[in-house]
Length: 80
Image (cartoon, rainbow, N blue to C red; front, side):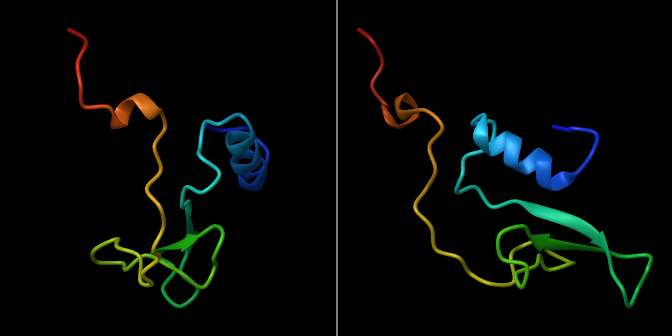
């Protein structure tokens, strides 16, 4: 989603409209200050948490409850 003005606005609107779940982790790309040819991915809500540049796995482990967009996704039964 692009609002055309600011990434903070885009995240706020996406959460308010339920495009993105309020608890969903969002990582933003930025230019590395030490190495301008590299991108650093930082957690929007916890700026001290970044993604490992090689694996793109979060450097800090964050334990959260799984997010389900639709309660029916949890239902493994099919209609008869």
